[in-house]
Image (cartoon, rainbow, N blue to C red; front, side):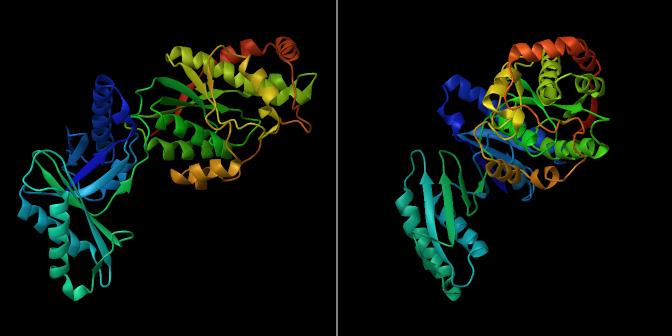
Length: 386
């Protein structure tokens, strides 16, 4: 069995960039398969396709989850002659067509050959009808139950009948590095996953606010991290944690409790920016969606961003909560992140929806938050690996 891998966006790049991205995607395929226990995958690049061999059928789903993959096709290689291709299509039909099914033949011929796509389609269609006459099958070119594909290239030919949609995007890590504010709720894993999909090497940073949150809050973050780590083509992927207990204690002593959530999030930004500098990251990723909670009004987002010079990426900013949940279901995090946890006890009864930079900076100065954030940043540790 050969898994044919196609890509989409990579094909639009210049020759040099495309070559580099193809190399990265090929290596990611090797790494992710080895990470899942397949020791000797063979990956090659030819004719705008990537071919994966040396793995069993169940590896197709793993390959489809690698960032940059548009489609995966579990296929059988056949001899590069007309009769062998026709026979290969017939054999594929025998495996896939059931009683009363309809089918279509979709050939693709690239390069110079003594036959074309129409020749294959006509002959293969006739041979399939003849070979499976006892199954009462019929041709339907518009909406077939089973589509029989063949790809004929300059030096090889493959037949298949399944196309598994990939996650699309760009190969992981090819677009730089960023720090994700990773709470483990519904939003932050989705924002991290979307940036991973765009080729960003994402370092998840959890803010441990105990004793103002319970242990279940930490447990959920770790479980969520384990889920998202399966998409990372690296042997070791880490969840980092910053101790924010002292920072939170300082914030709760403010004379203006309605600004607690704003100062808390600004403190997270500062800690993440320090962490980003240490790891040579270029941005901070958050799960903020405009207007979702009090701290995410446009005025408050402006105040949050002013706490750091580091670019802040908000991939969920224009999405509805239902849309975010739908994406979470796509990569399997929803059931984990939708679990209820012990909420933050520092949240005020009436959080401010509008704040001003100068007012917040004055309150932070009174509390010495900058120093507390520096101390938290100096004590970041790894709490999970995936």
